Length: 208
View 1 (tube, helix red, strand yellow):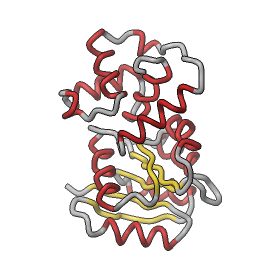
View 2 (cartoon, rainbow, N blue to C red):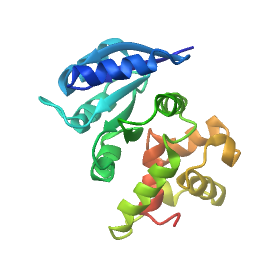
View 3 (tube, rainbow, N blue to C red):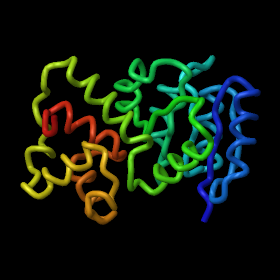
View 4 (cartoon, one colour):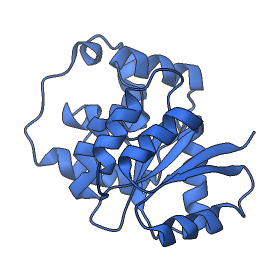
């Protein structure tokens, strides 16, 4: 089964470049394009892609608010991979809270971008885990530790160890966890995306 992808960017040349790069990759199918955030939300609702590649800065509706609206749509979850040509740290915190599943730069090589799309669609790994964990650790260290949520407090010792392993960037295979175990952990934490669980763990200093 191919991963169905929607491209959302206000520059047609960028969309064309992404399409050309990804159409050559087995397992990835470009199902549509949108030129601004509002159109991106409408197309996401109409096409129900697995993953949306979402630009950050766009007219009408920026990528953060568009992501928030896509995350609120009824039906199976649509994962959003936020794309930026700017400093990722600037958008990371707000993006994760809006519901993005991953964040990366637009100049990421096509094979790495495709791998990130596939990982995000499966939910078994972070997109660019080393960079993502480094950015989350950097951002959260600039704030005081937050009070653990009820879901976090209720975790067993084994679940806290699993969360810590995920928060260090480990994929399911690397940490020896099944998809069901990770899904159950995310549900207990009240989050949908793996990256949000990672941020919660760093905010509460579950992992250093």
